[in-house]
Image (cartoon, rainbow, N blue to C red):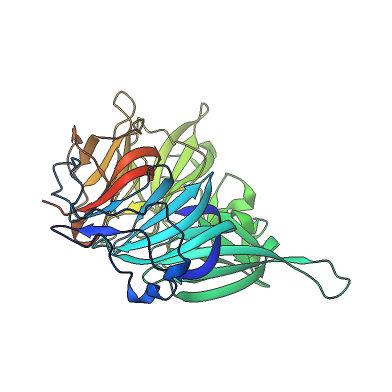
Length: 412
């Protein structure tokens, strides 16, 4: 998940955000020991109140009463980012990220950061990546230069894992991937937080700014065109039952980093129509074709799949995928569905694509079954143990809310 136009004051602070455990809890919980040293500097987060009683808003039938509740300030937008062991709340103001607050799967505050204007921020699987660009004054007659510091923080505790300094004109963001050039290679920050690279010579005429990563495999459009996708080890331009000469464009729709799959749309025919395929990123082989008669890609960007905690299933927009099969849900003559979470059994959860305010239309899609619609708030992510994270509030888009409260609900 990419969080644009943020900046950072590198100070870990004790959270003013508070939680409540089921059956009790302090109205003024003490900050964790790792954050306590800088508590006085925290002005951060717009959510300052707590509740000792878990929220009572109705969630879907698959989930039980809340184990914990975070009481929020609904006058601010927050992106609710769920990982298997952490929940990250990214406070937004006028399209800028102003704060990050990280909680454990038990609703306890772990660490937070105050953000200023100027830095790109991404939350990966276990890593937060920040790119801070600043002018560096020359002590000679040479012109000032602009340098970017790429900082990798542990999602678990906020500690610095790695720092890289690069001239700013050598840093790019593409498909939620931080890419940077060095003398002989093009490098990217992979989903697992590692730095992966490819020799510049293998890009041929492709621009480094067009490079993306799925899993730990870098790929890019051949010759900066839409005719083919390539990596260091493969070229993707042939598809089963589609003559190569009929394929006019190949568009990467989604990246599933855990499954190592790239979901692509191949436009073909005299009056171009789409077909959809899952491609193994490591080898470039076609894993399978998806049947998506009613599917319509929502924008020109490439989505990052949201995965089950065990990494065996992924969802994005109305698409459900696993390692060996995938399908689209709804669309066409049916209502459009937006899937936001999937659990370790492959059951996906979401709502109607057009619903935003106080969403309570709960769509459940079993791995091998038909979609079921019921009343209740849907989870925006599933944590280890099947805990569903639910949000009461106005949904702006995706997982960005003006939240009143956020709860962790165990499965029934």
